[in-house]
Amino acid sequence: MKAYQITGIDGLASLQQVTLPDPTPEPGEVLVRLRACCLNYRDYMNVMGIRGVTGPIPRIPCSDGAGEVLALGEGVTGWQIGQRVVIPFMPTWIDGGFTQHHAGNALGGAVNGLLREQACLPAACLLPIPDYLSIEQAATLPCAAVTAWDALFVRGNLQHGETVLILGTGGVSIFALQFAKQAGARVLVTTSTEAKADLLLGLGADAVHVYQNDPAWDDWALSQTGGLGVDHVVEIGGPVTLNRSIKATRFGGHISLIGVLTGTAGDIQTVGILRKGIRLDGIYVGSRAMFAQMLETMTETQMTPIIDSTFDFDQAPKAFQRMASGQHSGKIVIRI
Ligand SMILES: NC(=O)c1ccc[n+]([C@@H]2O[C@H](COP(=O)([O-])OP(=O)(O)OC[C@H]3O[C@@H](n4cnc5c(N)ncnc54)[C@H](OP(=O)(O)O)[C@@H]3O)[C@@H](O)[C@H]2O)c1
Image 1 (cartoon, rainbow, N blue to C red):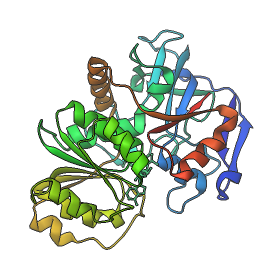
Image 2 (cartoon, rainbow, N blue to C red; image 1 turned 180 degrees about the horizontal axis):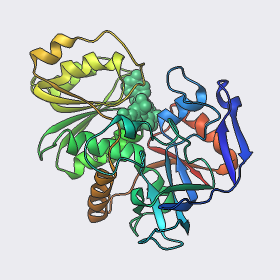
Image 3 (cartoon, helix red, strand yellow; image 1 turned 90 degrees about the vertical axis):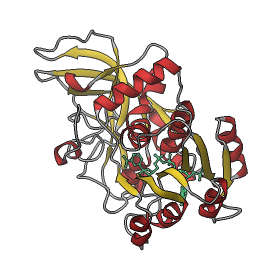
């Protein structure tokens, strides 16, 4: 089979297309013919060799994939050859709480990912793709959508009428916008450019703030909530944005700490968290059970993911360049 491997720490130059032996399913596994893979910022960091992120090499990148069942390992029942399936980010995290074991099985990080033609996965982790979604659309869901779902509904317990502040127009943020609007929340979003602001308003954002024009988006969020602050923040920035998120959050509010776009450590106003009684939740994607619940709700509402661009397998490096440009809104897909 064809695959891509990260072979070093020289960025895109280290992303090599290779030929590997076709995998054979072990008992309890399903062989999946991958048809689409989707990028997350984490995949970009891995490929670029950003320190502290890259796992052991050579390593097949990318956590998110969807495809068709090609063969069943011994003892596997309940799946049909040709059935369309999507693969969770951590194949061992079926239900219940997060553990170190699950983190150690994150695709495209701790273990080989899905930017390849075939992969064997535990039968118990797979999810059928709802009929209304294409395989490409399904491939956008395992990381960004499940993360947004976990942040808003599992850890956040978002209620109708609450206000959510979302940062940016990346994969996690656009899914969070779509989910929060469908749940009847009021959604405030920050973004870099006027053009992206128009897209967000088109997707139902109640108010948008262009931070390139005015970096004080925390004051803007306060002014949008009568000075009280928002109920929830979907925090994808990290150390440089977190202090503004704390300021923008109401007393007793909730911040989902998701992203590392501005780094992995910093000077945080911890007193603001305690003084306001803010609940600060570290989020690491979510379980298969969360994914299944999300798919059920998406099927009811027929929600479709926003795809920024699609690249052929041989053009995979261009997909990473698109992410590097920062011009994307929504998900970047690679057809396999
Ligand atoms: N913890 C988890 O489980 C989990 C899961 C998925 C992703 N993540 C993390 O979440 C972050 C976003 O991931 P993604 O895949 O959604 O990324 P993405 O699709 O590349 O989106 C990034 C977007 O964030 C905005 N942005 C960039 N720098 C910013 C800054 N300094 N301040 C505010 N907004 C900024 C930009 O949108 P605008 O131009 O519109 O501002 C950019 O397009 C990454 O750090 C990723 O590693 C974590």
